[in-house]
Length: 436
Image 1: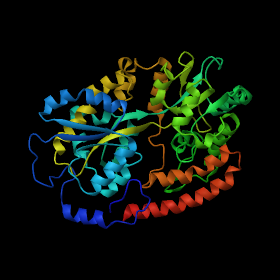
Image 2: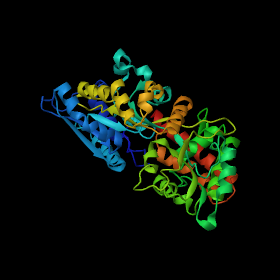
Image 3: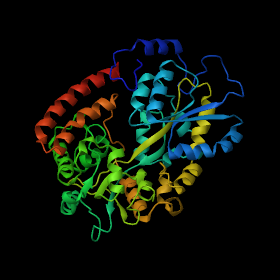
Image 4: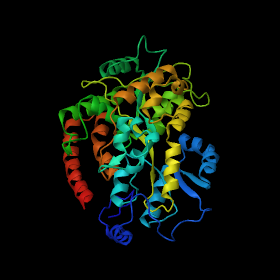
């Protein structure tokens, strides 16, 4: 069955089944459909998000082209453009995509279900020099679906507590209770200053809220069933919603990263929790007024301790329809190998290998307190920040409802119970589609 990346309609399965039949026993490690072995001048085609990692790799492409004796065509797209291209091309079994940059937590389960990704298990585990076991366990786990490695992580992120050193006396809050107390004390709404800013948009806030959920002892699903109606989840909803409702800016329910981040960067908030990968925004004099006063700290501990996410935000896979699977693997092997990851992390791009998180040289590009925060998150982090389902967008929309209620100052428990029932029904349908 083949399904759209963006559409919630999972009932149209005929096309994918026909393609699976047509492809017959083609190996998942790559098939040579549509004309046999490509000519030597056929470029290796890489589709990627327009990201600092992709830009850094593109600058090094001449080195790789010389290594394999083949030209590389690398397209850098927005996330929407990338998703739409995959949806159109891979539904048509197009052979003009070789290497795919994917979001393992958002897309991989669906791509695997559609049969769009090549199985990399033998390649990553059969190459001792590649050192697959060196990848962070949390990110390595997310690279596999149904026991098959379908992607390789290249960029990681964790939540960081961004805070104003000039306003917070002594050490930054180490617990969520301390964060709430200090954020409320520093809030001055009459003066247009807020104790805390964070994502509040219904769907967009879910991934960042996940660390609060885990740190209160909850989870999205427990034993395959909805966990968002349990007491731990309700307390996490109430905490996060209350933090933004009492200490946050007006209009928080409309805020994603793009709206929340500038509020902290312009010196209008004392605390901000978001991905550590965005830290450069607060050090850029063109957009930040807090570059001299910003501090970085690990995610604060909740009742269940500190349980931040530690995820592969972007990974590399090989299209199942690629006619250059060996060259595609060589690209992945080169772009995610030990030497490359060390070099890119030394430039400030967080990698997925354990080695670089204990190497002073690869951490030197980060502010020292941020490096310590990132090391902590890489060591203790949970490898997922959203539910592990086919229709991730729909699931996030359901899960975000109680968050919005909390931010608006409404009772959370009844909304959480309604969302829990809706999510439970969703999981039944999602599992049915997954098994079809």
